[in-house]
Every structure is written in C-alpha cells, then in structure tokens.
Image (tube, rainbow, N blue to C red; front, side):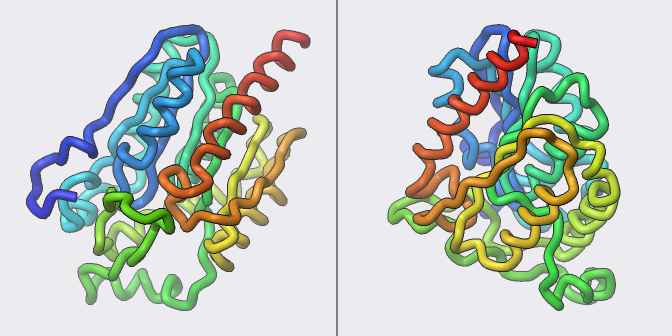
Length: 257
C-alpha cells in the first residue's frame, strides 16, 4: 500500500472479459481490488465478464477511510452492478469480509439483478467487546491496528491498510445494522468459504447468514490452510475452482426451469 494519498496501481478498480455471464467482486474493509484480482482472472479465463470496484476511502491511506459513509460504499458497488448488468444477461456477486455484507445487501435491494452469492470469510457481526465501545471510541481514537498477518502464505505483498479508521469501523457497523434485519429477504443461492483460522468472528457471521437467509441452496466450505484474506492464500485455488463449479451449476439449474 502506498503511504501517501495517491491511488496505488494495485488498488485501481478494473473490469475485464465479455459474455452473457458476469460476476461483480467486492473487496473487504481496508482492502483493495488487488485481493480479488486472481479470482477475477480465473473467472475471466472461464468465460465470465468481471468487475472489481474500489470502495471509497480505500487504496490510498487509512486516514481517507474516515470520510465516506457506508452508503457511499454501497452506492459504488450498486453502480458497478448496474454497469455489469448492462452487458451481461446474468450477474452473480462475490465478496470477501465486509465486501460480503455489501454483496448481501445488493441481493436484498436488487433481487432480480443478483443471481447468486459467493462469500469468502463474510463479516456481518462481531461480538468482540471492543466493538460495543466503537460509537464512543470513534470520537477519541482515530485508528486501530489492522490484521497484522491477513495471509498465511509466505511472500504475498500486503494489499490492505495496516491501520483502520475507527470512524470507518463505525460505518461498517451501521452497514451491518441495515443488513441484519433484512437477511431473510435473501433467496439467491449462497456459498460461503470460511477459514478455520478466522476464529469466533468468522463462525458467528457464517452462522448468522446461513441461519437467516431464505435461500434454498446455502452451504459452507471450510478452508483449513488460509487466514482471513483467503483469496490470496493457500486455499485460493480451491475457492476459484469451486466458484466456477457453483456458478455453472446455478446456470444449468436456471436453464432447466
């Protein structure tokens, strides 16, 4: 990540591929499109059009995260979905961490435009006691340390902020507050990949999603050899291959109806 406020090359949003099937990929809190590039490239090789937007306040310096509201993040992904939908007959949405929460909200707000959900280490809740203090802490502490080691695999460059704006954490919590009561409106097929190393926070979010959505098809696959940023980690190939199989199965099921 760049230490200044200019946009780093790896952080730039991008789109690629052509065809009737599209996938919108949404990066996580404090991350960048770089975390989704390998997955997007794999999908493109299998005939999918892909789009990876950059969330406001990301890709530059952590101080920039303090400015946007969660609605700004949602507006960005909503616009990216509209652009992709214009050139594709079907569009699935993939998200990692907070990006998964945004993907779920898109599925709620635009059910006809989201055909399926692919979620990696989703975050829609966190019971850590520090989270309860965030509404006050945001006015006292500007930042907290980010994940010191988001990837287990050696030699992977960092693509996320080392510090996180507390005001941005509060905005993420407000996103969850908007989403949680509406999870029952999600009916699209859902697949979740969860890193075992993600601990209680990962388990809680996965249980909440699988327990509250009304999707007839919803399942969870455990990742044994990855940390939180699993799309760049040791289990990445498994995620990529299974995602193509999942989307292919959904396409065939839709054609058979």
